[in-house]
Length: 446
Image 1: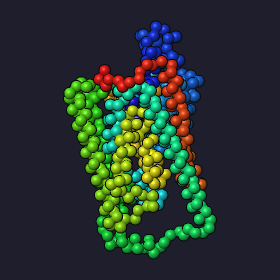
Image 2 (image 1 turned 90 degrees about the vertical axis):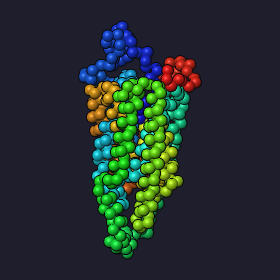
Image 3 (image 1 turned 135 degrees about the vertical axis):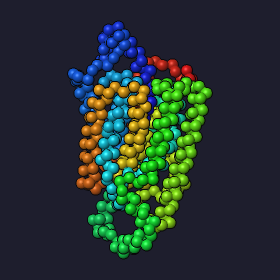
Image 4 (image 1 turned 30 degrees about the horizontal axis):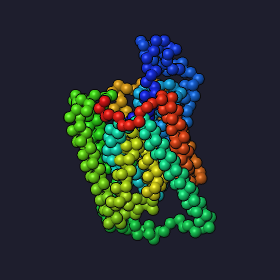
């Protein structure tokens, strides 16, 4: 998530100049003719309320494997009275705090039915290049799309995500109820020892399969992580080479110059090539496991060309949404993973890793550009981290107590419902108040 709710940026620009403190919004003061935000302490009553809301929203968002970007943005802009260009980097810091501690809490957790990490690093790897490719496209579209169009697209996406999560929640509840009835009727047996012994003998006879099983017992699968880090490094390096209007290129490339577009083409081709390579790697790995007789979980995706292409398209759309609509890539990819049939525990843990990916890249970019307000940012970071820990542990306790993975999806549905209501509502109010006549597309280079 990089360019957050562009239509708000225009509406808040009028308050940047001032002659006295009365010309500035609340929580701001006039400093050398420009409105500046107050210092952290002493906290006002509204700031205490906003801090508590960040804590609660972080708990809800990270329990569902999301970052909660849209809600955090509304809190910083409407309660803390931050201008959007200052709020954007701090939102990323809030998201990074909650998602990173969530990732740390889950990185050692094992899969519910298999001896491997609950985070699916192969699907994380499969999503990463198309996600970053979509982000590149979304940044370009963000410069030319008018505010009203962004608001319409944002509303449609949030409604779709909420509906999808609600639909999946209902299906999971019915499935869990059916399984509980079977257990009550004693129709489920605890295990098939003959099959288990046969699989152990297969492992002893097949050294290649044994190597795969042994590698999955580690916290991180080495090969996917190496490829992932390579893609991550490519994204960071090309950003610094290309630059942006808010962060100049390290090699002096002017925005919209010929070299700028050449670098953009190289970035586009590079991500397309990396996407193709990752699809080949994941599909080939799944095919090898099938040949060797690997014991897949019932909810595993056995990767073939069709589901891999679906993930690539979803990743591109999620990347566009992350940079254009400010919704975070995991918000779209989470429901996609659930639709693919992944267990809710696997989906949310993998979504959290995706949030760490997107927010960390944004933080690096904002840090280099000098856009981070560190005092308030670290304050928000701390409460986001604490809220995330509370939310994740609370939901885990509920899942363990009631043996219902659907609780995670229900929490996600509630969060998305809030986003679907509050974000468009606030956007409509702001667009109405600015009386904007902007209808058509804008010039990218103007």
